[in-house]
Length: 261
Image (cartoon, rainbow, N blue to C red; front, side, top):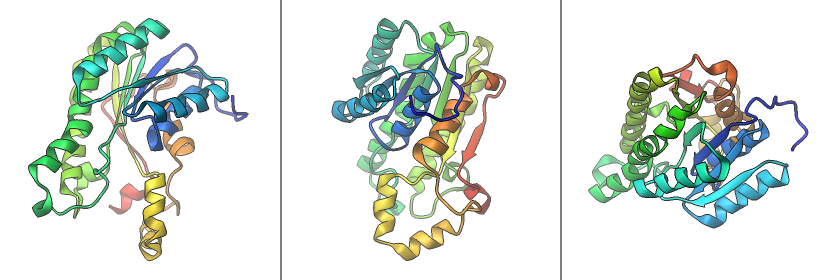
């Protein structure tokens, strides 16, 4: 594994991460493996999932790549069944998959039903499918963890992207509801609201340098987060043994951006 000081707090645990073929999802998967977890890479495109699995194996970790469509419940149920057969259990679920259009600003009057349905199917209905598919396995674990990816916009709203804000508001409500529903089974349910410099964000800001500077000025720490080092490790840390009493929380991993929204 990579020579760093991260404790191997997830040894013996199995994690399934959706949308792990790249971006934040890949960062989360790498951080999970770095801390000792066996990781199932659930990606819409098999090739990108295999790339992430290859990176984990190159660092000495264990990974299984599966082609999964989170909009289809049966696809996730099969992914969980394969995980149980391959690794013998499932302890951690991370739903990170997001529709490709979710991060692109679009005014409500230009947002038709097809746009809405497509984003809800991946971001929100996908979270519902993940929860249904993973529940029994998480209940069988002695340390079940479910993590959803949220956004500060789900609390404060987002001008020019109201659909994304509404969907992430739904994730916020689902997280808190499942924390109450699943608590008696020993399963913790939390959400992370990240602000990471993804490849897509970097490409966008490269064409809008003034906007980049204005946006970075909102961060008290003066930078956007790293997909693996900042967001991934925060998610992995939340799944560790010292966080078993934390549930129903929406945790901002955003360099202080939340304070400026």
